[in-house]
Length: 195
Image (tube, rainbow, N blue to C red; front, side, top):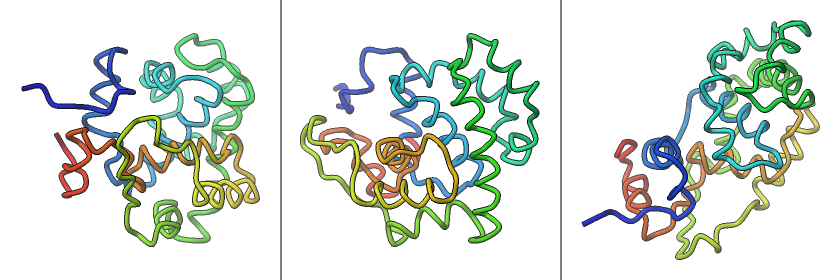
């Protein structure tokens, strides 16, 4: 019998479904992974996640495997070179935002200790469980993502609107928004990170 999955991951391409099956909604505590998701989600603004995910390998190559210190050190010339690659979203503001966000990310780490601790403090260090029956019921943003977005903007981050931040919370497992009929909902709820 085929396991049920969240409808959003079906019918695109194998890597998209694999992302759903193995990554989406699994609690993340690594600052490097948080920075990767934040960079990719910022690039997504106005586009589909499947588009950005299909370009993930190019982003990894250009953005130093999402090493925040290396991204912060990228020069204007290097960023302009990145902009020539059709393997990424060629939007100047978004590409330059990656470096800006790296700088802000480092400042936040110095202040709080880790970006992960900062984010998890907004959910009292425990994932919020959605308990959704249908994909249409899943929100695009919440009061929690509103608060985080507002604070990150105050700190100087770019492309961190509430919808982008909510997508980050979902991806990084601070929220379990798999629909209840999806096999991953219970696996993640029970602490099984991998399929």
